[in-house]
Length: 471
Image (cartoon, rainbow, N blue to C red):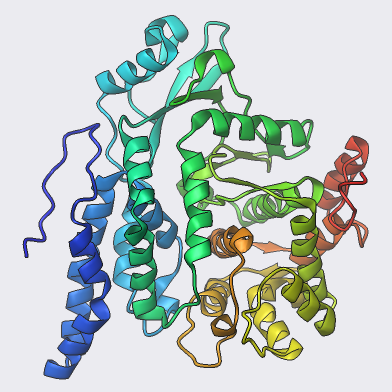
């Protein structure tokens, strides 16, 4: 089999035609077993994983579709904590996808914008920077200035990417392949078909920039006048299905933020925690893409949030179920925890998980909320979270006895991604206090908490444990 991937001209979307090869490699557990059986050589196994990881990264980087989105999600996880570290080469290779997506040629980006907006770029903007400030899996972002002098960020979608992603999502083998690949290292997984459908729905929404514009407006409305959470404003006259213009949020990028003073990093972590976990406590939605590339870190301690393609809107029963389940863990009410998990569809029909077992599982997932506060996030944080959610090889692992409700899929992503961000910042925060305050069960314990709760009260917003339908 020829595993090489030919170069792709800039701006063109490469179809995922090597899927059969990808699927074959995803069953790599059989290959690895053969290598071990014939050679008994862990070095040969390691080399196999290194070579395959590079091929995956090359394939995903050229696809600009669902596979690359999956690669970016996977790259955030510390794969060394899964099993014996078999996934580490893949994590290292796929990390490059966060920053190395090849941009469109300037002429092509301008042509996409002209076609979408109905006018040449120079008529829409007083200034437009051809070199993109960011390039990702679905589009790239350019700095520009409006005729009225406002600096803006202009997101331009790659031509053909929407069609490529829709075709990927129509191919049910694709997400199944990714799941099989993960299973080769983590062990048998629960039935994730419903979860795959939920992921497909969110990715489909991400390619519709008008949908993202509505999300930005909803979050900007929610966080109006907030003391430390910044949300951009959409510029409707310079936006369309595949071009999205929003006011520019200044701030440090992720690489620069990691070099900042530790006290400032602690502040940023608390701000992110309050926005990501507070949005569904004060409203019925949450930002489902807590990726460090989506943050702009202010030297004044504020954080700007700039990507709202992946947003989950919750029904009130679902929102209350989520908050209630977590409160059962925090209050160590194991009978209530079992009842809540059962009501929210966590249990398979044959599950015999006890309240103690359920609590012990959640205890690992939200460990930082249960230990003495404030708590410092470290690599151990990520290891613990990954083992609880992904490394299910042990026969008694709770995930083998659970059914992942599709509406809860992205909450796992929130947990893993937030832990990864906070650990990378080596942040120390009062995590439990933030949750208790936003649920409305305790008074503020930090200065940010006092500012946040004062804002909630001033705006007349509900708390996590309130009935939002009655608010």
